[in-house]
Length: 132
Image 1 (spheres, helix red, strand yellow):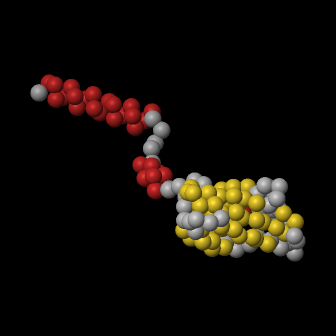
Image 2 (cartoon, rainbow, N blue to C red):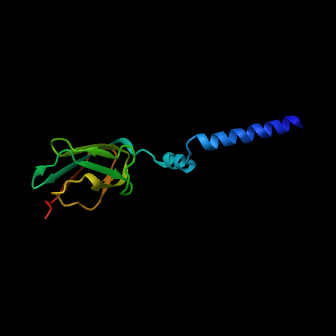
């Protein structure tokens, strides 16, 4: 009987210490992170971004199953030629841009659906109009 009471007291003390001195843990956050699957695959998608026939460099291009926070493999920046290259799993995706760092001198385009097929180099060109 004394052992059970002793173990109960130790359990209460440990529970108090853990609850008050360790940072809170959101168990659902771990579950949500596990759900985020990578879209990285072996199909190449080349996205060319232009405005008035000039390539737009250093522009963030996002790809995901639905617009929103992009998954692993869903964010690239255009190079000096205005090209962002993704290696994705085959499927339908949305191409969109990060509104928080999108150039103000350009019109923000609507998300665009893209089909990525296996066995070929998939290409898409996006013309972005000047703002105004």
